[in-house]
Image 1 (cartoon, rainbow, N blue to C red):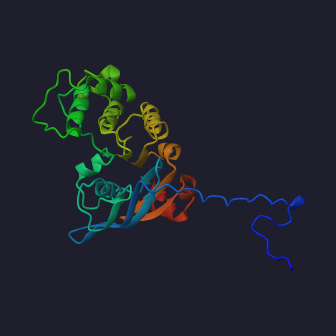
Image 2: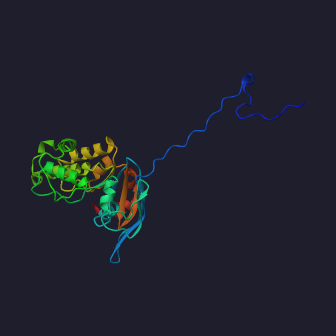
Image 3: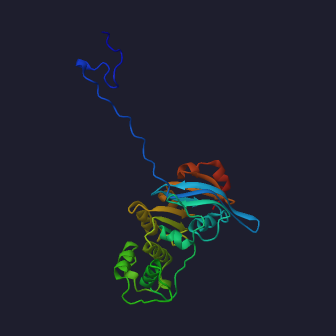
Length: 278
C-alpha cells in the first residue's frame, strides 16, 4: 500500500515526527475610527465661497491646530463644525454619525464643546455663577428660571479647581484678567464634559505673562484627560508646543495638513501664510 505524499499544515519536517508548531499571522493594527470627519465641506454666502471643499479626519485624542491669514475661513469652518450656520455642501460626522443638519445644541450633547475669539461672559455675574448657569443649561433648563444660591456646589468646586479659578469663585467676571477670562470660558466648556473641544484663538488678548499657564492648562486637558482638541491660534510657539498636526487654511481651502515641522518647511505655506508675517 502506498503512503500519501501530502502533509497537514504545520507538520512538515518536525524533529522526531512531531508536528511543528504553527505560527499565527500577526493581527492587523487596530485603527480607531475618527472622532470627526469632514467630507467636501463648503459654505457659500451671496455668491461668495467662504469655505471651499474641505475634507479631513481627526483621530481620538489628537490635537489639530489651524493657522492661516485673517479671513482664511478658520472661524467659519469652526462654525460649520459646531453647528452655527448651515453647510452649503458636504458632510460632517461625529463618531461615525452624520450630524451635518443637526443643531449646535444637539452636537454639544454628543460631546462637542466650543469657545470663541471674543469673550462671551456675562457682566455682573460671578465666576461661580457662570459655572452654575452652564450646568443649568446642560440640564436643558431655561435661563429664565435662575436660582443662584447653593446650586451645583460640587460641580462648581471641581471645575473651578481644575481651571485654577477656585480663589476667584466670587469675583465678578469683568474683574478678571484676560488670561483668567479664558480659563473661565474653559471652565464653562468643561461643565458639558466635551470629548471634542474647538478652541478659537484662546490666547487672543492674553498677556505674555499669562500665556504659559493657559498653555499648560490646555495641554493638560488634552494629554491628561484624553480630550480631542481643534484650535485656531496665531501664537506659533504655542502651536508648535501643543499640536500633533497643523492645518493651513487659505482663501477658504485647506492648503496643507501635516506635522508642525513639515508644515513650517512647506514652501507653499511659507509663501501663503508665514511669508505674510502673520
